[in-house]
Image (tube, rainbow, N blue to C red; front, top):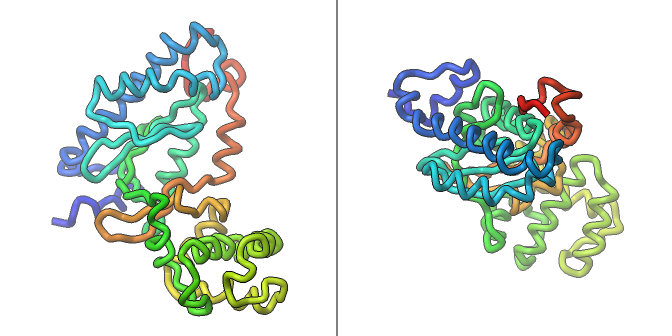
Length: 289
């Protein structure tokens, strides 16, 4: 039998075998449960106070929603952003749920599913296993996030033979972020970042374009992780400075470098552009206001 966690590619067609339904069944049910809890939370807690709620209005009461989710399901909160909350729902998977008044988080769920089922990018993003019909939730591969103490591990994925071996991991980390900016076309921003932080810390003349190029180009073509990150930045419009400790991690089964929260600009803009139901009937919440 092909391993369950490798069969995710079939989700491009949204097809589930009976075995997969059995494996993910509980998680799929939990996703629907969380969405229902959120709809009840909007109706009973938010709307009486804010008839036309904003994202901030919903955020103000999220602790009550999360408390109810954890009380009524086996899901455990991982964290919440402006548009979604993530929950631990199994040994190898998590669920991200839209927690906005008009469905803005669905845009991010769509992107997560798209990137997690693209074979050519599958090794840089969490694998996507399933989603609700309207993308209110998406089921993703569980990944171990980097913490502040994981600088050395982060740096190890991006070797650079030009940097002095005695250069600190913190400096190497920041140079890596600068290189993402540099190769994404933000050359002046990368130079400014380097000038402000690394003069005297690395043996290179920051003001010399050739020296700077030597350091930046030493990342490219040396390992597939760096090249895949740059391809993802270019293809999806990911902000280069977001490929940082707070938004990345390690695959639990294969120890690969994974982008967790890609901050795709188009999804952010689409999310903030969502309007109230009377202006945008397909936006999500079906409530008579």
